[in-house]
Image 1 (cartoon, rainbow, N blue to C red):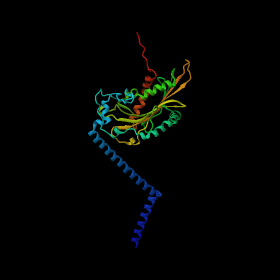
Image 2: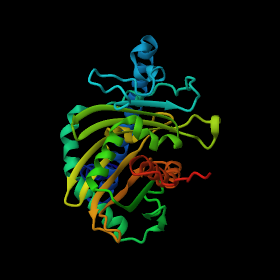
Image 3: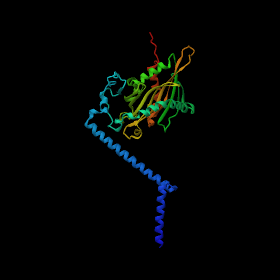
Image 4: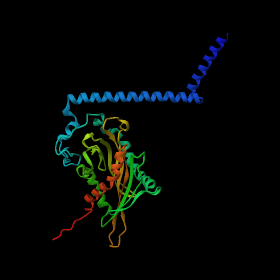
Length: 353
């Protein structure tokens, strides 16, 4: 009898625990739900990794069978700016690639899923919303970076006033803000020249080439006269030299121009597919970027000439401390290269007899 009562009590306790788990009542039920959800999450991760491996294996098989049909095998055979579309866009405007391998075919990484990531035209509506929100996003950036915290490394360098914070997001993201006034230039003049400079991939590459080991820029779609979608891949020189395959940093971004009460802007804003945040491909990282050139007018100075106030700001997150530290050093030199091409040489050496 006692044993029967104990067995019934055990059944009752088990039933109560099951009810708690189903209802989520009590600490035991919540803990059980957490454990159950954790198991489901791990199962989904395992399924994702297995699917990723299957996709890569399938893509490898396809490319081995038809190697001439895929862009990653053809890039090394395409000269800089040789992409023609029948509309006069064959001078580097829509495609540019370079390598520091002295004309030799660079050793490529094995094919990965990242090599096949492209632009999803169904997201155009979302991208247009990003453009509409850009003015307020830029204003919030200046409030957060310049207004509420004491920046580091303040001072004037080559006439540029710089305001930068320490690296954020666990040391993988840098945020920066530079500004300078150029007398005798109008905002519209510098704005249009900067847009043409950024729109031509060969010209835009001059801002990046001194920093990278290999670079590819390709326009995937022209949404309209003011918005284009660009795919960018760059390999940066590894601290290990040739002992280590350089990481491929990738991004798909919007390049657009706009006018707002705050001035004229040329903006680069990444629109990477969501799954690339944890793609897992070897030697591949997708970086997020949101950066801009802003142009506004200023009153005449002592010489009586009005001027153009230029702001260069934004953020870069490569999900890598190495990437963040490198671009924390290089971002200012990239800005000087923009000034050299769009305003005037920063340093002019006078000829002597």
